[in-house]
Image (cartoon, rainbow, N blue to C red):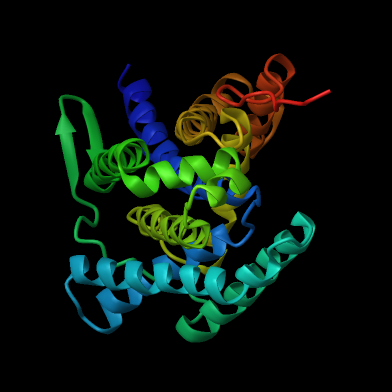
Length: 298
């Protein structure tokens, strides 16, 4: 039971990170029907900025996080405003290729600026742990879960009750109709990219917290978030969160139990298991758990 509970907490913590990354994908997709392949690069940039401000510049960790958030959000909004605004009316494939280009640029620039060796994120929790009977949980995981839940609650409140949340939902449903009634779609797109940059930064520094470390390959987490957004349903923020939690739990539980009970599946099966779960779910629900079938007029 102790092993199960520790794996459960670790799975939820990892799932929270996947949920943040998947939410970033979903926010942009819902606003513009484009999958942002630079989301992993934003995570990489944000995490390195936190580390640089905290360790190299010796700022308090909270200030380092705020500065990293401001810079990453600024770059995301600037990219959307300066580059993507000129792609309006262009095929979606063109926009996707531009995001892939941004991903390549950031993956090359970040190691050049900060180095390509492993480094600490500079988090204040380090290796400290919380003991609940026989269950020992790292404080980094506790804070990952708590902060992620607060962020998700804040986003859903914003999306549901704020003026710009309503504008984002209206743009997602019908962009032309939203423009016709005066919705500032350009601001909506910029806001979507800014929010995606923010959640990527937060997911990045939690992913690199103890016992992990920060290195240029950390952006590969975005690939593991794809099963989450597809499993939950493209365009569904709730689906992104639920999908992220499911994928995190599947990965951690598989890595904890499979070597002992199904070693014949081979090493590294835990990285394959989320994709198997995604395929099984799509066989039953082709549009994901919370996705909806597109309406077609005949």
